[in-house]
Amino acid sequence: MANRVIPAASKLLKTLRPLNSAASSTTISAISPPIGYAEKPLQSPSGHAITAADTITDNIFNLDDVDKLFASVSTPTLLRAALNLHAVAFEPLVDIGMWVMKSRLMDTPLIRDVIMGIIRYTFYEHFCAGENAVAAGRSVLELNEAGLRGMLVYALEYAGDNDACDRNLQGFLDTVEATKSLPPSSVSFIIMKITAICPMRVLERVSDLLRWQHKDPSFKLPWKLDTLPIFSDNSPLYHTLEKPEPLTPDEERDLELVHQRLLKLSQKCSEANVPLSVDAEYSSVQPAIDYLTYSSAIIYNKDDNPIVYGTIQAYLKDAKERLLLATKAADDMGIPMGFKVVRGAYMSSEAKVASSLGYKSPIHDSIEDTHACYNDCASFMLEKIANGSGGVVLATHNVESGKLAVAKAHEIGIGKVRQKLEFAQLYGMAESLSFGLRNAGFQVSKYMPFGPIELVLPYLLRRAEENRGLLSASTQDRQRTREVLKRRLKAAIF
Image 1 (cartoon, rainbow, N blue to C red):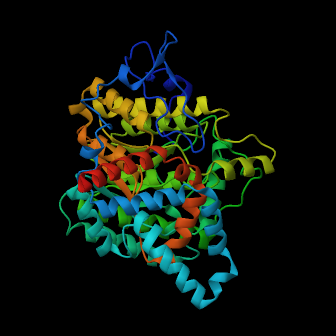
Image 2: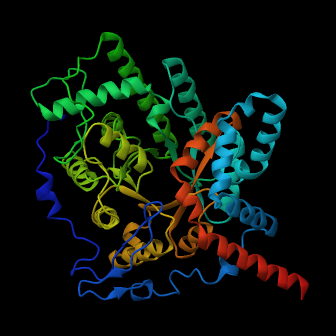
Image 3: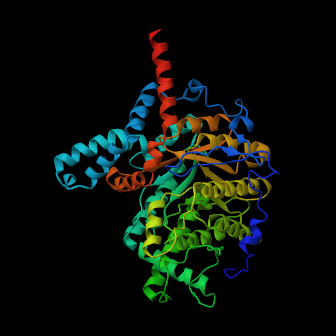
C-alpha cells in the first residue's frame, strides 16, 4: 500500500469547491489569519465587500452580549486575565522577559527564585493548565463547567536520546490514563509533538531519505511502512541536495523504537477513545512526522472514528495539495482521516533556511494566497466530514473567521458536522470567541499545555517567540474583558 498510485494533485484540486465559489453562498475568508497581518475585507464573486452580517445572523453567533459570554467567569479570574493579556500585548515587555530568562541572571539562585515566582503566579497560571496531569484535570473540570473541552498538551519536545524519549512517552501515557477519571468527552484530544518521542537527528535522516525517494522513485527504503502521500509536486525538496546514505542498523533500530512509541500511545488513546493530534513542525522534518503519523493512522483509524490526526499548516504553498492527496489515498484505503488545520508558526525561520540555501520560501508569497489556501482546506474538510468520514479541527483566534465558519457549517447542515468538527483556541486567550462558538452550539476546545514550570518554561519561551504577533493582536479580547469588568463594577456600585 505504501506504493499505491495516487492521482495527480492538480486533478484533485479541480474537485474542490472553494468557499467563495459561485456555487456557495458563504465564505470562510481569513480563518485564523497569519500573525502580524491585517485582515482584508471579503468579497463576493461580483466584487462587493461581504461582512459577517451577510452570512450569519446575530442570534446564531453573538459576541455583543459580553455579560452572557462571560457569565461563567468570576470577576477575580477576569481581572487577572485582563492584566495578563495587557502585559503580553506590550511587546517590549515580552522582549525583556525573554532576554532575562535566557540571561545569566537565571544562574543566581535568589534572582531565579524571584523571577520564577512572578512567572508562576502570572503568565504560567494564565496560559498553562497545571504542573501535572492531576492539576490539568482540575483545569479541564473548570472548563467543562463552562461548556468547553480541553486539549491536553504535555508540553515537552526535543528529546535528545532514547532514554529521554521513553520518559516523555510515559508522561503522555499517564496523561491519557488521567482522562479516564474525567467526565466523558471533557478531553477532546491529546496533543503531541513527535520531537518529544523521537530524536531530531532521526527525523532529519528519515526526512532526507523520504525526500530523495520522492525525487527518485527507484530509491528503495526497506524499512518504509504503509503510509499516505507525504509530498506533492510542489513540496520543497531543497533540504536534501545530495543522495543520503541509507540508515545504519542503529538508526533503523532507533526509527523502529519511535514507531513503537507512537503505536503504544495510539493504542492507549484508542482504548480511552481520546484522539491523538500530532502537531506539525519545521518543514525540514515534516516528511518524517507525516510518515510516522500516517503509518499509525492506517492502523488505528477505523469505523469512522479517527484516533490519530495529522496537522496541515496552511501557510505552506504545498499544503492544499498534500491535504487532498492524503485524504484521497485514505478514502481509497477505507481509512477515516482527521486533520487539524492551522496557519503555521515557523514563518521567519522557514524563510531564513530557504534563503540560506538559495531557494524561495515555502511560505505563500502573499497574505491573499495564504488566506485562499486556508479557506480551501477548511472548505474541503467541512464538506468532506459532512458527506463522508473523518474529522477536522479548525484552530482560529479570528472572530470574523469564527462567524463565517459557523455560517458554512449551517449551510452544509450543522447536524452533519457537529460531532466531527472541533473549534480550538489557546488556553487563556480568545475567550469571547470560545464562548460565542459554544453558545452557537459547537464543540470548542482550549489548547492546554501543562507540566512542571522548569520543564515547560522552554516550551513557553518558544511559543512566545513564534506567536508574539498573536499575543499583541488580542485587541478584541482585551476590549471585551474591560467592558464586562466595567459593567460589573458599575453594578456593584449602583
